[in-house]
Length: 333
Ligand SMILES: [Zn+2]
Image (cartoon, rainbow, N blue to C red; front, top):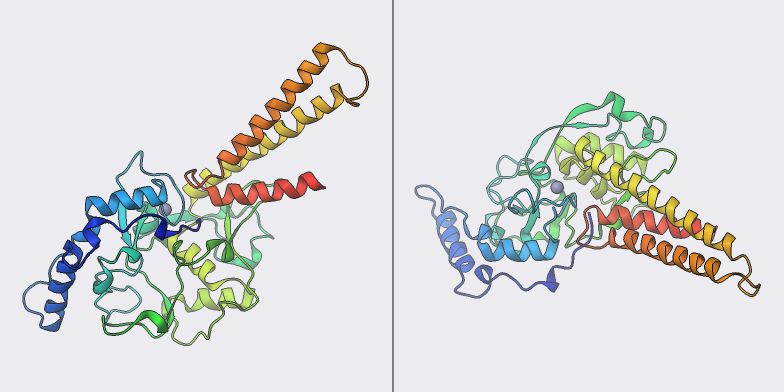
């Protein structure tokens, strides 16, 4: 997950203005919830073409949660950060219908992050403490239920109607437009054992708000995260979005192998050039100088390719960026 600044894209036409389709839909919903009769009005505006277009632009055709590029194989699936029609953690909640057409509440999501289903997940991904001890977690992979759907776990007081604001809610799910995912998530980067896992970051109490008000279903998970001293938001998000499901870990691992290969290539090509021209002031043949120059050029190309893999439009760019940061440290050493 990478942070996205929503304000760089303009709000979609369907959601802007006092007489927009969104404003009219909200009026209808308000009237229905004030005096329910018959079936409630349908939610339709959130999936307008203008919404899809702006989300596609803002997120580069990638899932807001897992950064998988899905635009080439599936149309953008518009997801509600605060679920519109129900809240799985609270059966009495009608859903956050009043923000069903709110631009700030809409995100593009891949099917796997959104739909609730069982996913093969390394056995220890939920047990944050022991992951380091058992790196072969996938051999004992198990089926865990993941996918956001109507989940919206919070700490604090849940807003039940449009009259209540969200100030008393502390969401336990990351929103790449509101949170800085980097503060809550880190990638497991171990060159001796390449496996593309994402882990919650250690937290010295920053988001360790009082646990009162937590949803019962997540109690165990929250206790574990608190005991381990890791980000609650990070930990719950990994669990609910299924950020360590098998297919995703495999894709990220493939990318890590590619980065490892490119790094090896860049260093090797550089050291070949260094060996050819150990002292730039000493005399050497035109051929040697030309080959050295080409090798340095090649090295630049390889480093450029690694940087391209970390661009916002590239899949899993947050992980690639983390790799490059580590690479810089290795270069210094
Ligand atoms: Zn996803």
